[in-house]
Amino acid sequence: MFDRPKLTVRDIVNEFSPSTFDGSLIDLISWAKQQIATHGPQVRLSFDSKYQYQYDPSSYPMFILEVPRLESDVEYQQRVLAEQGREIDLVIRERMEYERLRQKFEQGGKPEVSKLPKLDA
Image (cartoon, rainbow, N blue to C red; front, side):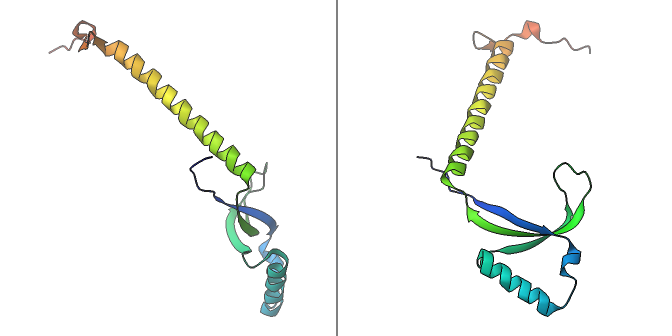
């Protein structure tokens, strides 16, 4: 239907304060193995030093547990249709700009010199 590839989406499973990981490395390894068992081997832990919650202007350091996946068929169709809509809007705006400039500068295929501003020498 569409000729665009599917994108990889990252689903956020959980956010953790850095203090969550206070403890021994054995505890951390155990926790990591538990997350792999629960969410699969593709689960990722990333760190964002300026993470912001929605509607909160402050930023906090945060670990983010996320699972990458290919976008669903519905997400794909919505994204592609939105992209195509933006492309159509761009072509329409460019065509309108072209027509405006063409009317401004052309008269019978030649620039209308009489409408150009006069330069004082």
